[in-house]
Image (cartoon, rainbow, N blue to C red; front, side, top):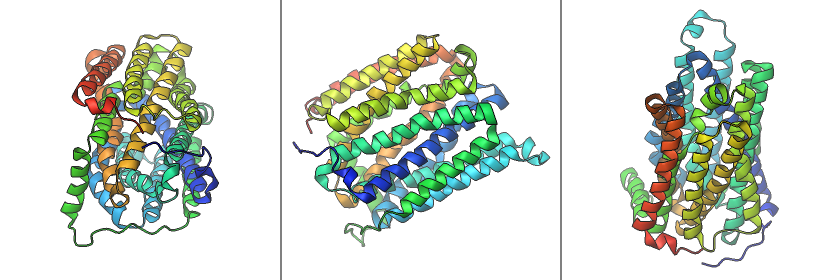
Length: 410
């Protein structure tokens, strides 16, 4: 494909700057929420399996409405969808604030179930937010700016993942849960305001006679017919499913590394720090020329970094291992997103992204459930070792199954 790029071309577009800044704030809010809910639930239950249930509570609604959300994103104002989905996230933050600060006996008795219910609702919001964001991005920038724009976009999101967990852990540790959820709500509100500053964009032409069923199926069929998209998505699916250790970080922080909520915030931020550094490097020098080979190599290295984290009992070595995992994961995220943007027609990007969300987005939550279940059965450290080994095996199998991926150049 051989596209030449100006590293800062996308950043010169005002709407795109507002878009990635809004993504930064909502990323901070979302990651902060993950730390708060994870630590709060673990304090209540002292059970690692309950942390896995957080992922399941969010994955079920995301999976259920994802394909429909992609159809909606291709036929409706994508800015409006992002706005409404973000409002749902704001409502969830305010609800968790109310639940955590309430002294009502009824709420105190059912606090755990209420928290899971709010997480379930947030999964619905994320289900609509993801395909709308992906499809809206391409309406803000010219095609020749895709590679750099995608790197800046993912770096903005990852930078929020650096600040959000650390902020969540520190505020929770020093000021308590009520202040923490208040800050989270404010960050989400700022994100909504920035989204509103973006000008309305016209939708691409679509087939108005196409039924809902046919519209959804066309997106699914497109993904399964495109071997580059399918192989990249499949690789990340299993890597995230087996290689994720984030859900168990409260256990590592509390029982293995002995760091408390402050340390948990840093552990949650470490992968994102690695991702931000790699993302910034990729805005200057993309690793997309030998995209397929680089994708396979970096996912393999991601698996090795997870193994290093699993066997570490030193806080700083654990931070380093998680930072490496984020850096390697960032390469795969950028390459996969670029493949999807370049290979997918404009009027199908919402639906194709929704399929990707089922494979990748919800696999984060299903991976959290798998981690919690494996920790329950095998123990915390053995379960992460198992996940890292499975990631390495998956890379080898994908490389053999899809030889065309090894030759892909962008």
